[in-house]
Structures are given as C-alpha cells and as structure tokens.
Length: 325
Image (cartoon, rainbow, N blue to C red; front, side):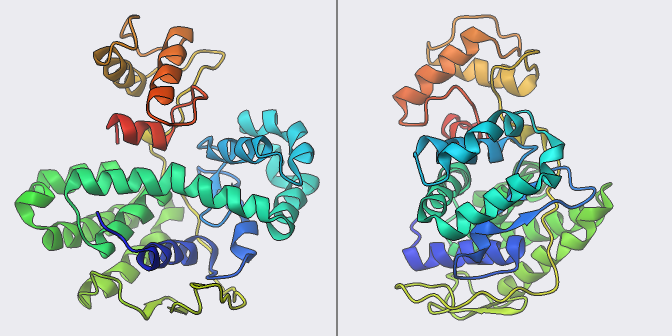
C-alpha cells in the first residue's frame, strides 16, 4: 500500500482524536486514562497503549533502553508494569512521571512515535497488504482497529459474510467491515464499549463522502484536520480537549503478548507460533502450546533474522511478520 506522509499523519490524527480528544501538539503524548470496566487498564500515550496488553511495558522498556532524560526514574517501576500491577493506576508518582516525561522530554515523544509505528502501524500496513487494500481510508479503518483491538475477529466475520477484499471489492468490503464492527461494539457484553460506536459513525461519514484518499480537510468529531492543525510541516497549533474520552479496548486474546513467564504461558496462539517457527527450522521442540525456553530461543532467532527487536517477546510486530494476524 502506498501511503503518503500526509495521509499517514491524517490517519494517525483520526485515531489520536478517538483516543485522546486531541490533535497536534505534544499534549496527546502525555494522556493517561484508567476507565472503570476497561479491560485494558491504565492507558498512556498519543494512541493510548495499555498496561494489561503488555504494550505499556514494551513502551517503557524501549524508553529506558534509549537512555533518555527520565530513564533512570522509570527503572524502579518496570517490573511492576511488566506484572500489570493495577495499583500503578493510582500511584501519583508514577502517573506524574508518565506525564512529565512526555511533556518535557522529546526523547519520550520520539520513543512513542517509533513504538506506535513498530507495534501498531507496521502490523496494520502488513494486514493491508495481505488483504489487498490500496486506499488510505481502508488503512485508517485497519489502523484504528489495530489500536483499539480485535481487527482479526471482525475481518473473519466479514470474510465469512461476503468473501475477501478481492472477491467483494475494496469499497464494498470496508463498508461492510465498518457496519459489522459497529454492530459488534453496540452489542458487546462489556457495556463500556457501546459508546465506542462513535468511531464507526465517524468512519461512516468518511465512507459516505467517498473520501477514500483522505483529502484534507477531514472533519472528525469536534476537529477539522488540516495540514496546519495536525502540525504538518512544522506548524503545530495548541491542542483543544473536548468533553468525551473513550479508550475502552475490546478484549482479544489474540492481541496478548507472548513471552516466557512463570508460570509458563499456554494457548493455541503459542502453538500456532511454534508451528510457524518449526516450518522455518527455527524450533525443534514439541508443538505443545507452551512458551518455554526453547520457544523463546526460537523467537529470538526469528526476530534477529527479520530485523525485529530481539527480546523474545511476541507482540503485534512479530506476529504481523509471521503472518499470525
């Protein structure tokens, strides 16, 4: 998929409005939320990554590794973040550190930009290529669901109903995708997700206007996205928060981080990964769905061969490269 830098910024800004109620400026990088009933738990950053997914741990780990201005202050918290310690959501010192580092250190903002590209944008782009999607608005729908969660679940439902993007045509497929996802959110067992249908309602406006190239200006809720308001070309206008804030993340077991833990993680997702690694002659152990030391060693070898962060942790970036999402 060929996406211009301005289209990429527009897509990211749409999601940023959904996640932080802000566009442009640095304030979005410091956004923190902890909504009761949200399975993601504490969320942070310009596109709101969550502690319970394990991705907040990856973000902070990357920041510490960058030896940035506040790195040493984050070190004592890293294991608590890895353990998904719910008390961090009310730890004033930790919350203040998250905000201060984002507002005062360009290093945190640079790490966030690289992190969201690696963990969300690049996997979304791989999904788009695999689907055969070519349009900027299609990528926006994919990226929003990659950030918000459960893209694969909705994709499979749409494929079952009307066939693939190739079979149904890109325009028809993504219009159906938006409808199916809206219905899924509206009827989800977690009532917190019901109000998130506004995301699909906003996309429906763009779909109805046939703005598949995301030509500017683009109107999203209380914001008009232009090159100027998004800060394209170096001009950044002040951010203006509005009265709503929805970061509810649908639970999706396929989105979880896979890693060596005690007790050992188990599941069909691990077995599928082991099968991929075995086919590449990187894993010779049992296909037992258990993430043990042999599985970690195979993951590290795969990551090294493919230019990924070789930490033995399988998140969206590694899954996308393996073709598992």
